[in-house]
Length: 374
Figure 1: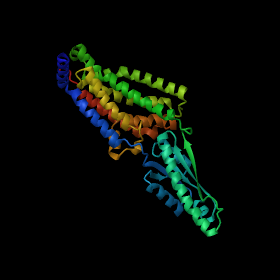
Figure 2: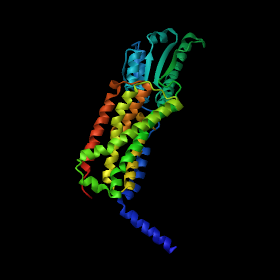
Figure 3: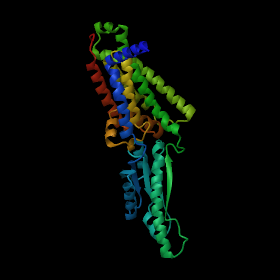
Figure 4: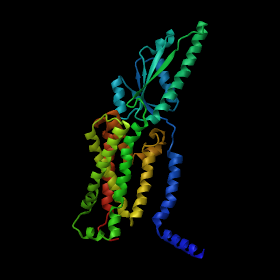
């Protein structure tokens, strides 16, 4: 018993000297608690919706206001055609669209049936069910009111259904989960492997004692950083190709858009993750510490990027924080290109974000690296 206590005491002393591990033991549980308790919300709210109002009547405007008052929908604009609806969804500006027929108001007053069409982006199945059910309940309640009014006026129980809702799912009509998850896995797996691989780069050199060779070399700091990144870019592309091929063959994930465009934009995303991993490596004394830093970064990426939980359901503060994560923007790129056929102009702002994040990470990493022994 005494010997076991002595070993335990020795282990505690070693942990006490490892300040990074102690910090992780405290910070990681707190971060998980804050993320799951504050930022993560499985309730789908504020779904961006565009309105294609072919009627322009007061009744149509009242319907739109009723939708907005539910809190489940956020009206982002009006469109003039189905083509504009498609463009809004390709750009990620809208997740759904309400189409009001041209004789909506007259149908309500003459006793005939008005048919509303609700188009939903099926590439995100997490929002489809909630978006459809909420509007269906709203339309059903409105229809019941009109039925009651018509019955009182006519004195008959045989009246037509005043309002009918037809739903139309684009891009993933069968609502297959794999169609949504597999493109997201491209970004998640690349984030995990790229950050971890490079995080142990300088730390491994330091542990093996080969860091001195880099220190006395004529390499500049920028050359060393980029040289450390380049080999892993190829590894990232190999992983990406394997995931896309397996997803397409085994799970039927469609490839609607341009693969060359996806591979071109993926270079920025891969480079950003590698630069971040190298940044961790320059601050870690051991490979274990580098790995701990990597896990500390990967967790909020997965939780806040929109991979597991609806992005629109998160509070505004969490959405702002997620904008600084490379995975958030790459998920929009890969899902937009593969599932919705998005073109460069549709996702150029996501590329701007990625380039900005990459430039910042390379600058910080280059300044952090010191060509001297610590």
